[in-house]
Image (tube, rainbow, N blue to C red; front, side):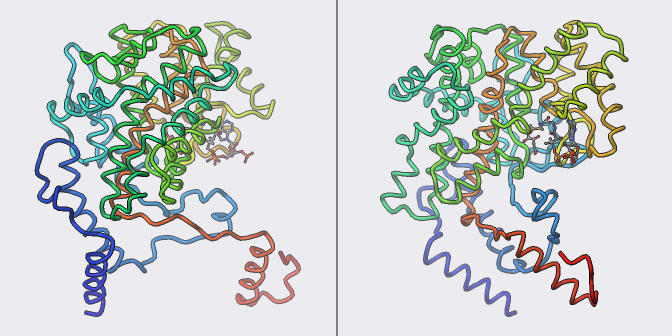
Length: 478
Ligand SMILES: CC(=O)SCCNC(=O)CCNC(=O)[C@H](O)C(C)(C)COP(=O)(O)OP(=O)(O)OC[C@H]1O[C@@H](n2cnc3c(N)ncnc32)[C@H](O)[C@@H]1OP(=O)(O)O
Ligand SMILES: O=C([O-])CC(=O)C(=O)O
């Protein structure tokens, strides 16, 4: 009874102060993704507030000393509407296994064998599988919003070629911040209830611009500035991107569609998603939040691993050739480990089996280029590397992750520049982290600010806990 009253007063508080339903979106009138969200968000917000108010004090996990000093591994700490990771089965987008998402997304362009990233964004954001028309509507929206302001292109053009493409992507997305409708609305005193609408507009604009931004970085660093920056309204988002990269071949565009779907989202605890969310909770705009996300993706233990895999494979092929024996491969792997390095593309903080994103890429490879020497090698290593890693008796997951496969496919279709690979990952990751960001604003996620402890404070805590447990004269005092 008490709880119900609290809930009522909570609702009244939010009704009167920051959250209200907005007349323009009531009943979700209109068409398209935004209208769908406008209908869904008030319902989800109500549910969310109900959970918070009625069940907010229930315990769902425990924090150990290892949690504090060990990267918060496995702690059930974060909220994520768009996707959920099962350690054995891999990622589910909105409750659907990735394999099924790939199979069911509508094929929009004529002759394509893959769904579109546009459809994937619709699914992640709205929670429902789009119809062909709904996926096409997202494509049309992104085409309309795709031209990049000149000052941003000028900034990209002025970059020294030695600046890593990922650093350029971080800079370019941050410099788009004057475009932010979120900033404008916030400055004018927009209601909290409406924040999501501006986050949505900024996210749609940013995603629409990313292929041109990424292609401009590519053409400057690797093609002496050659290449188009014009959006073609006949093509979809991936078709435009591939054409701007100078790689318009049909199968490559299909690979890109698949790649963009596979790399989009991996719940909210991974570095790129968490960075985006964290920065977004300070109400930094989506351009800045995405830039922070890309700074995280650029690390070798996260997204840069796809570049590292190719560096490692290139060294391997140079040392022992394209068709080495199993023994030669094992020795090369051992030597890498003895050199104190990790095997890039293997292991995962959560997954405990082969990453389904690896498997889906391998299925594409088997269909389109099974005789490619790089593909053959990666497929063989899938069996051999886990055997070696298991013998170390410390690697929690000896199996390949998504990054172990992408590079050889890109090489097959002549996208040879390794330093660009993580930018592709970043363009795709925008779909996931920005749909998460829209929902964070929709549900009024508060500023993130966990408590931290010094080692002295941790020891004090341990000693007090030991004392309480009755450990007298404990010689192993912390
Ligand atoms: C998109 C993505 O971000 S997917 C991940 C991409 N990153 C990579 O592929 C880089 C290679 N892999 C790794 O470095 C790790 O497996 C990570 C960062 C992905 C996960 O890290 P953790 O959760 O800490 O892994 P785990 O608990 O298995 O680590 C235990 C030990 O095994 C080692 N280990 C883990 N993976 C590997 C590997 N691929 N090769 C060699 N050793 C490894 C760790 O370095 C650690 O050793 P230590 O105790 O001497 O420090
Ligand atoms: O989930 C993780 O920690 C890393 C990962 O695979 C991703 O972000 O795609």
